[in-house]
Length: 202
Image (tube, rainbow, N blue to C red; front, side):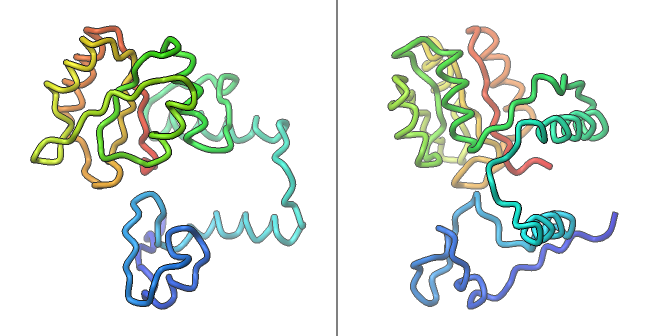
């Protein structure tokens, strides 16, 4: 595999982009949104997008095409992570928040609580309540970590799921392995689900 291009374009070039992160920013403002990257697209991704444009292929995704994607994911997970995924159970979604909300609606009773480290990605605060769920906020401690005491209290108070964003958004701090292990133990002790958002993972 060749070197990955992690160069970031000059600010003037970034400000010509029309995404939410950059549109409408004043000159000289450096937008710090974590979830939207400024690095160049990987060449195979750029090539696939160009090929779709050349075909004028911008309609709704075909369900028949998702099988190949699911098989590719299963192969990647086996090679890179040692995970065995049943490709038949992979379900593509139009948006990551839709996935979180539907999982929470399935795993948490109506009116139940979902634990979430805060500050957090803003759509969680509107979409989870709209789905009939409460948010048990877990303010980060002075070191920027999810406080285990607060998590334990939320779980004892009835939270049935934890949305674990790692690296944390918006701070960008990665959760250390030992803390991840303790979080897993606490949730297992209280029979609560961990819904992992590792959007920056490979």
